Every structure is written in C-alpha cells, then in structure tokens.
Amino acid sequence: MTVTETEALKQAEAADKQRQNGNANLLTGIPLAQKDIFTTLGVKTTCGSKMLDNFIAPYNATVIENFNQAGAVMLGKTNMDEFAMGSSNETSFYGAVKNPWDLERVPGGSSGGSAAAVAARLAPAATGTDTGGSIRQPAALCGITGIKPTYGRVSRWGMIAFASSLDQGGPMAQTAEDCALMLDVMAGFDSKDSTSMDRPVDDHTAKLNDNLKGLKIGLPKEYFGEGLDADVEQTVQDALNVYESLGAELVEISLPNSHLAVPVYYVVAPAECSSNLSRFDGVRYGYRCENPTDLTDLYTRSRGEGFGDEVKRRIMIGTYALSAGYYDAYYLKAQQIRRLISNDFTEAFEKVDVIMGPTAPTTAFKLGEKADDPVSMYLSDIYTIAVNLAGLPGMSIPAGQVNGMPVGLQLIGNYWAESRLLNIAHQYQQTTEWHRAIPTNFA
Ligand code: GLN
Image 1 (cartoon, helix red, strand yellow):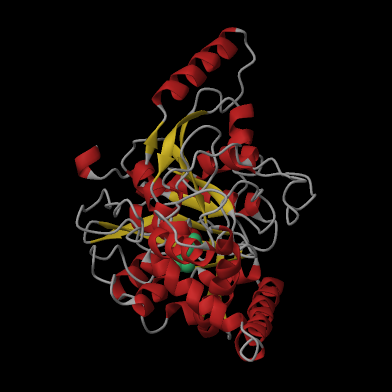
Image 2 (cartoon, rainbow, N blue to C red):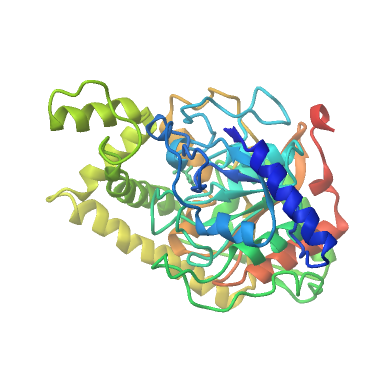
C-alpha cells in the first residue's frame, strides 16, 4: 500500500549507529512489513478501504511502537481485505493481492499482503491480524509461518477494530523461530487496551529446542471430514507422521460443536463490526462525500460511497442481529453457542497437549472463483474460526504442497501456550524443508 522509503532509511541509519555503539538487540535493523490495519504516525493507514484513503494516523499502534523501540525498520504497509473482512484479499479497495506461487490465485486473507510479501521474500517478516483466520489462512496459502496469539496477549490499541472480542495481532514469517522473536516484541500488557492481559511475557525462544517425546496431539475428527480436499488431507497426514517420528502420540478427539463455528462467527463478527464501524461517519476523519445537503445526507452518502460491498453486507447483518426483537434469537444464541465451542476445547485440552489439523480445506483458489459466493468464501475459514471464538492461540506452518501450491498444518494450543506451539512448530521445521521453499518467480 505504502512504501516508507525515507523513514526506513532513517531507521536503518539509527540501527547502524546502535550496532556501532554495541547496544543492538535481536531486532535492531530488521526490516518488517506492517499490515495496513496498524496505525502509523504520519504514514497513511487505509485498512484496505476507500473510507480511510486519506487517513494519516496521528499516532502509532502499540505494536508499531514496540517494534520501533526494538529497533526494527518499517519498510511499508501491506494490502489487506477491506477492514480485514475476507479470506482472499479481493475485498481491498486497492485491488486484489496475488499469490506469489501462482499469480492467478488468491493469497488468502485478510492479511494477504503480508503473507505474499513474506512468501516472495520482499520482507523477512510481517505483521498480521486474525479475527477468524486472517493470519493462519493466508500463511497456509502462501507457504509461510504465522501465529495468532491468545486473545489479550498482543495489544489491540491502534489496530483498527473489526470484531473486538475476536481480533488479535501476530507475526507472519518464514519460520517459527522468527515468529518467536517477533512475538517477544509484540506481546505484553498495554493499559491502553482494556482487554490486554496483565501477565508476564514468556521468552518465546527459550523452549524452541525442547524435544517432543510424549507430546499428545489431538486430531479432531470434525477437521478431517467432508469438505476437506483429499490431497490436502494426505499432506496433513504426512506431517502428522513426522510428528510421530519425533516421539509424539496421535489421539483422536472430538470438538462436537465445530460445525456451529462459522454460523456463530457470522453473527458475532458482523454484530461487533456494525458497532465498531459506526465511527466512520464522514465527520471526524476519513472519507466525506461531496456537497452534502444536510447531516443525514452526509452520513448516508459518506458511508455509502466509502465502504465496499462486503463491509456493507456485514454492517447490515450485524445491525439486523442486534435489533430489538432479533437480539435474543441471533446474538444471544450465538454467544451461548460460543461458550459451548470453547468448552469443547477446554475438554480436549484435558486429554491432549496440542490440537492439529488442516489450516484450510483446500490450497489457494483462483482469483474471482468465490468472489460472488460469500457463503463458499466464508467456509474457507471452517477450521480457523473456532479458535478465535474460544480466544485460543493458533498457528499455521508450511507442511507440503499439492500441485505446486503450499499446504498449511494448523496447531492449536491451550490458553497462553504460544511458547509451546512455537516449540512444536520449530521441531517440525528442524526436520523438514517446507518453510524454505520459495516461489520460483521470486527465488
Ligand atoms: N475470513 C474471515 C472474515 O471474513 C476472517 C477474517 C479475519 O480474520 N480478519 O471475516
């Protein structure tokens, strides 16, 4: 979206000085791409929307501030689905992102720009955000590593809100080790985010080399059923065999309410977004229509012209679900089922240490293939969404290819188990090469 060349060179110079003075740390001078959902002081922050096409943020998101403090260098801002609503990056006002592995295919969404940038080695690492899968699904489709931390681990301050009870920022990189280094910087309590958890931050690299003997891996039978591409399933199975050879034990489990995750999400997320996006009214900042005749005209035309179709669809669904008369039937019911979904995970984690399965049911689909079919698009997050509803950490690592397109293995951990997930991912990456594969056009 934006290349911040001048600022990057300035930050790089400062990093050089720090190195010369001998007080550099691990991220000093490391160039990063930032998803255009994080506000950046003095730099355009669009969130993929015409609504914010002219928005220069007057402050840095906490995540950006943390990277600045750590001496990292911002290369620029990456494209994304409009307000992070999408699974293909096609809803961006600025046009679709292409998958570096096949330019006719989607990179996944909503953090598709970040995933594509890392896959094509335009940046060694990037940030993403994940409300229903937006770090893990594009990581899977582009063959990179990404982790969505436990809800409350990474500050949401300055991360433009989509669905506040689900949104969580996290790193996207080539390896679990790089994600660990980034998470060390991103994670932590922030008094500016009321849902931020006041809890010490793990040293995410400390346990990377622990061995996996006796690790119990739960395989939810619901994640291996109808809808899962047979070749993707085989690839996931091969990855699980690697884990067995590392000393892990595979245990079949059940998450009986899994099939309700997508329907629940498409009540809860639109409800929250309809409230969050009410702030874009053409008055305070962002897009304003020309020559409004009165205040109502200003509101309706600014919003009508500033938002894209998918955003409007979500606002309408959410407003409907929250209306008097429908609230109990939809929103309240969804919240009750949300609890059942998270109880399923709590029960599962009494028996196993980690849950594994596919990140997405297929490899990257063609650009345009699902653009006119929202329901089929929504189903591409069928394995990722429950994790957000429960607030758990989830990860995707490159685990193979089908017809030259990357496949992701999903790892789901218990609350605050980021270090453990990174360890489990790192051990796989010590014995496999999938995370090193580079798309031929960019090798
Ligand atoms: N694809 C899902 C959606 O469209 C999730 C997006 C996200 O995680 N930001 O809402």
